[in-house]
Amino acid sequence: MKSHYTMEIAGVKRDLPLFAVNENLYIAAFIMFGDVEITKACAKELLKKVPEHDIMITAECKGIPLLYEMARQENAENYIVARKKPKVYMKNVIHSAVESITTVGEQDLCIGDADIAAMKGKRVLLVDDVISTGGSISAIESLVEQAGGNIVGKAAVLVEGDAMERGDVIYLEKLPLFDKDGNPID
Image 1 (cartoon, rainbow, N blue to C red):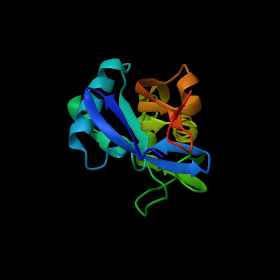
Image 2 (image 1 turned 90 degrees about the vertical axis):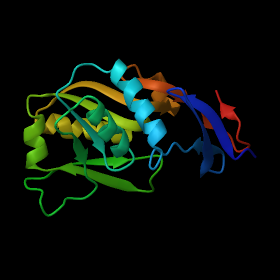
Image 3 (image 1 turned 180 degrees about the horizontal axis):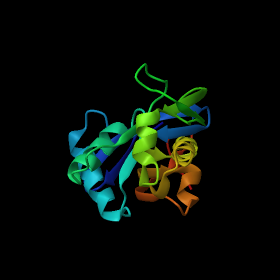
């Protein structure tokens, strides 16, 4: 069994460790946390591809470094993170349920009135690190719609699985799924 998958993303080569989703299906874990080089490079390349927007949003938590770096590189004044649980400072919270391939069980994403106001009537770009089943991006989409934002694009560093066939996602690279021996599945 292979333990990792090597790929080049935004001109940077990385070995992505393989993890079991079930006994016959493995995924390659792309983790941007702590990897400043890949985060900067991916943000730069994604910004070249995305449409004009007024504000960006991602789900807590793996997309945060990417979103921050994209906002920094384009000199944005703010960005939005859909939280997993309401915080005490959040008022008039709206929610959206999500199931993700990398997290066990259903999660809840939410935003409060300050984030709602920041998106209302604005051009909103949805950002994530990896889109696989599309659960997280759909939950974010629901929040933006509830807030009255206008979605202008959905962007991710990588797409895998069913997301490879979507025509509505801007991405840098395709990431295969893997069999129990670590071989890419076509």
